[in-house]
Length: 142
Image (tube, rainbow, N blue to C red; front, side, top):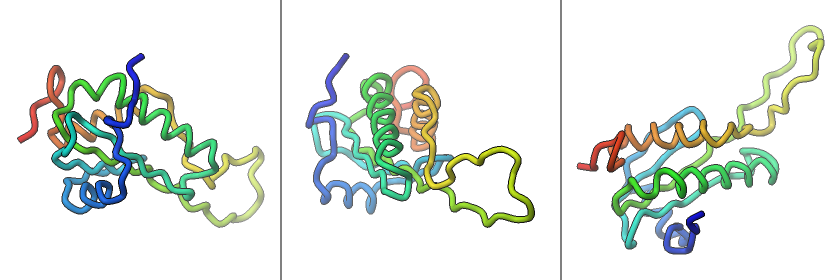
């Protein structure tokens, strides 16, 4: 497996701020993607997963899936760009009405991460909408 080293990550808050202020943005069901021209030697990924997404296990799963999808299938197809991915916060629980449900409800205090394929698809679709993908299945950035 290729490593996900420091050169592939956005680590400094100044870089996060630059990408989020100057970059283009696109929303999907679970994610907000910010894309700006890169300052490194290749594409870099920054992740922002707040506590509003859920407990530590849930946040860490999101981060692991996003890093893996970026590393395995998207990194080689991106030009030199900086990508910041923000996982949207969990939906606000609805107030109960009437009788209690017959079966237990899903924990509404966290945004459950789908599988790797779904996260990869959501990232790829967002990057296609941002016109950032190179190679097969994508077009070069303008």
